[in-house]
Amino acid sequence: MGAFLPFALLAIIILTKEDVFETWMIFPLTIIPAGGAFGGLFFYLMGFQWFPEGNRKLIAVIFSTLFYFVILWISSVLAFSITGHWD
Image (cartoon, rainbow, N blue to C red; front, top):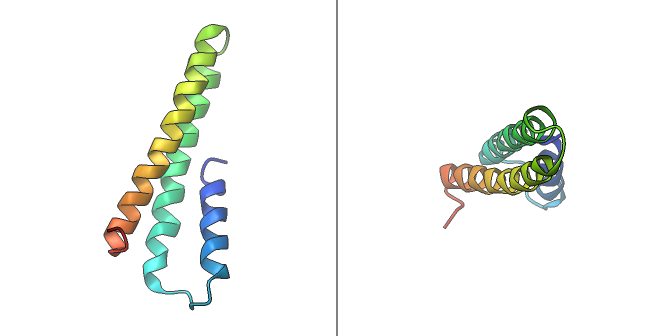
């Protein structure tokens, strides 16, 4: 689930552009959802396995949500830096 949301958003953005699909678009379509999958796995482990109840679960869910968005940001910077589209 963590990888599907970034992949769907990127696919919609890329496919609605007037340009034809280019090979540089493969890197963002693979690296960013991979970061989302890692963030989703971390969210699941923190919220449901390691801290399953109480106030510690609330803190773990908040922290892992922030961590998920940071991982998405880092993976998007990495993907667009590799392709040369990050200035």
